[in-house]
Image (cartoon, rainbow, N blue to C red; front, side, top):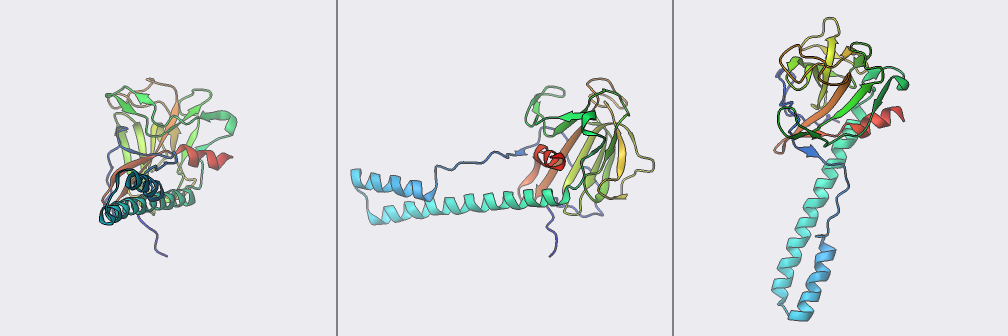
Length: 240
């Protein structure tokens, strides 16, 4: 079966997608839909009993409610497909160290102020010793390097696009692995750089925050635009 591509670019188009943390996000919280066809059917019956209505009006309203439920069901299924694909291709925890040497929590959506009001679209893995260049960073997936270099928010960063087309963003590095360059093929677990504290300024800026790795996951479903996905559940599953 051919792998579905979520990021709509070919491997020959080596470019960096928008990496600002102001992107839209996919919510992991389970959605509740009061406007299901069953709920609306019940409400419509009550309205008809109390106020009276024609069969034509009732049928038209019911069909509209049913159509909305179909759209909701399709959206839920699509989300499940995306998350299943991500879980399958994310194989390796991105920090090559014992669990006592780093910490991380779910900070998805937390407020950020540098560069304007925005939300945190990723997960920060913190070095418990706050020592720049101490911990190795590795690719979570197989893929191709599509970004290497400076980003004002992310500092020295690496972007890797997986075989399915999903873009994985590793930011605030202290240095890169020797020979790392755009176009390189990488395997899950391959060393790509060292954890640092670069970013939040002009090229070379460091020390604006504690040493950590920012992990981001970006996909682009055709016709829906770019969506940042919360990495935390996937990272947590790798060490649990």
